[in-house]
Image (cartoon, rainbow, N blue to C red; front, side, top):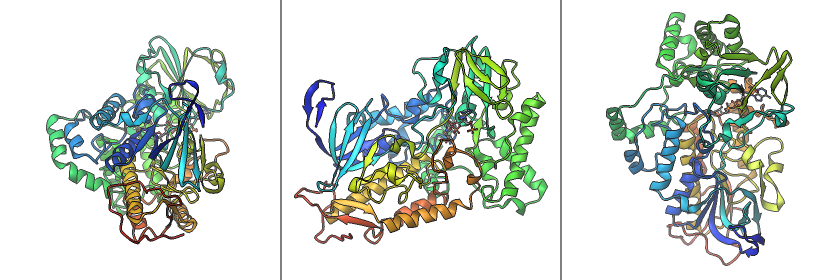
Length: 567
Ligand code: NAP
C-alpha cells in the first residue's frame, strides 16, 4: 500500500484502484488502445511519462523533425470520420503538424481523461493467485489490472553517448529526444551536433542555416536521399479522402505497411543502362522511391553495392570540397541496412562556409570539456552541444522498470540474451501482458501506426475470445514462442540488415545482446501470422479459468457455455 495520493499528500494511503486494462504509453499505440478498449466497455487507465499525448512526436521537437513516410499513410485508419475531418498540408508532415494531428485525435475521441500524464509506471507485478497485474506509478498510485498493455514504443529511451566529461560542459547541452518546448535560437552561436542518423541529419540541415558556426561530429556517415517534399493541394486531399479505404487496404497488404513503391524486379534482371535510368528516376522522384526500384536490394549484396555506389556518386556531385565529400560517403555497410534517411538539403549544407564536418573515424572524440569537444587533434569550443545519439531501441522501455511475471520471472531476466516473445505481442511467463510494436515484430521496418492498429485489434480480439469462453488468463506456450523466435532468426539471416552496426541489432548500446530481433518477413506476412495465431481456439496459448469468483471483464460479447482451456 502506498503512502502518497496522486496529489502528493504524504501519509494518506491510496487504496489500489481496480481496473480492467492498464495502458502504458500514450503514443500512437497507447492512444488507439485507450480508444479501442474504452469502446469495448472496459475500465481503462493510461499512463504517460510525457506531459501530453504523442510519444516520439511529443518529445522530438528539434528543428527539422519531420516524418519520412507520407503523411496520408502516417495516420490512423480506424476512424473514417477522422480521416474525413483531417487535412494534411505536406506530403511529409513536420513535427508541429504531426502533433496537431495527434492532439486533434485526442480531442475528437476525448482520450485525455483516461490518461495520467507526467506519470511513469515504476513496476508491474503479476499475481498468480489473484490473476491480475499490480501497476505502480512514480506518483504513488497503485492499480490492479486484469490486462496490462505495454505501448511503450520502440524508440522512447534516448541514449547519451559514452563520452567522458559530458557533465562538465558549461555551454547549453540539448538532447534531440528531449527538446525544449520554447524556441531555441542558434544565431551567432558555435553549435556542435553529435550523431548523423535520421535525427542528426534533420537537425544539421536546419541548424546549419542559422548557426554562427556548426560542427558536425560524424562517426558513421549515413546514406540520405532527397525527400522532395511537396505541399498537398485541397484537390489532392479530396481525392485521398474519397479513396482512403483503398489506400489503407493496400497499405495493410504491403510489406512495409504503407503506400511506398515496391518492385518485383530483380536488380540484375535489367541492363546496366536501364538500371541507371531507374535509379536516376527514383532519385528525382524522391522519398523512399530508391528502395522500391528493385526487389532484392536487402538480400543481394552485389545489387545493393551498385545502388550504394550510385548514391556515393550523387554525394560527390553535390559536395564541393572533395575531402568533405569523401568523408560523407558511407562505406563498409550496405545501403538501407541503416535506416535510410530523407533530406531536403543535407549534403548541400556542407557547402556553406559556416558548416564543418568533423570526421571522427580519422579524428575521434577524446572527451567533452567545459568549453566544448576535444578530439585527438584539438578542442572545438562550443556554445551549444546537441546530442542526436539515438535510443536504446526496441527493448529499452520495457527494461527500464520492473516487470515481474509468473513465479517472479522478470522481463530483464527473460531478455538477458536478447528479446524473446511470441509475435512481438506476448511473452511466455507473462500472462495477460501485451506489447504493441514489440521486439520480434516488424517494428522499425514497417509503418508503426499500421503495426499499432494491428496489434491493438489483435489484443482486443483475444480479450473478446476470453470473455466469450469465460477465461481469466492468456499466455503463449513456450513452444510457440520458440517457434516464432526460430522464424525471426531464420528470416533475419537472409537480410543485409545484419551487416551494419545499428540500433536494429543492438550495436549502439554497450553490453546489449546483439542480433536482429525484428520480423523481416514484411508487414503483410506478419498480419497473416497474427491472424493464424487467433485461429483454432488460440491453440498456441494456454488459458486459465478464474481462480476467484470474479467476473471476466465484459467486452460486449456474450459468453457461451463451453470454454476451450489449454494448460
Ligand atoms: P541513430 O540512427 O541510432 O543514430 C545515432 C547517431 O549517433 C549515429 O550517427 C551514431 O554513430 C552517433 N553516435 C552515438 N554515439 C556516439 C558517440 N559516442 N560518438 C559519436 N557518435 C555517436 O539515432 P537517430 O538518428 O535518433 O534515429 C533513430 C531512429 O529514429 C531512426 O532509425 C528512425 O527509425 C527514427 N527516426 C525517424 C525519423 C523520421 O521519420 N524522419 C527521424 C528521426 C529518427 P554510429 O552510427 O557510429 O554509432
